[in-house]
Amino acid sequence: QVQLVESGGGLVQAGGSLRLSCAASRSIFSLNFMGWYRQVPGKQREFAATITRGGTTNYADSVKGRFTISRDNAKNTVYLQMNSLKPEDTAVYYCYAGLDLQIFWGQGTEVTVSS
Picture (cartoon, rainbow, N blue to C red):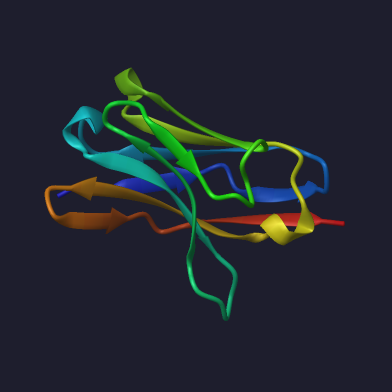
């Protein structure tokens, strides 16, 4: 089992930046991967970014070049640095982690980008 707690969401103007954090309840080295999905009300949750245990990163085309996923092993925390934010980035951002054959989710943090 792993608990995930996100933070860092908020309201920002278009072109601005935010950094989301996801703190895990266990060593992130024990997890196969961690990452972020996002969801707009009424729409399906969509992939944003992921980082594997080995450090490989992957991004959705919609955020590539603007978002950066990273981790602090000592703090068991994964970050999502979001730059050049657009109104279409407005969503609830969910942290997720893979452990064995299970996926665990955080409670979500809301990001609103005003135009």
